[in-house]
Length: 103
Image (cartoon, rainbow, N blue to C red; front, side, top):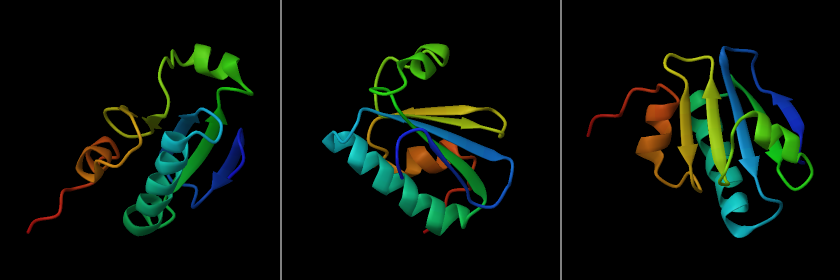
């Protein structure tokens, strides 16, 4: 997905904004990890916007983004924020309001 591109993946209430820094390694990893969880756990029930701060610094400033990658989760209660490459699936699932799987 290109920067500042929005993908409507089902029109549900979960809205995600992923702030990245170009094609940096952690940004690539975050995009992949988020795509994986959107496909497996959300199964298309979200709206994702990827914002590259190199091309849209004003968006980062409007949302008080100081570090990338940062994922903002809106449309759930409470709204969430995850900073980093989103490799901690438990933390990501918690921010998305998904129930933890039991072993």
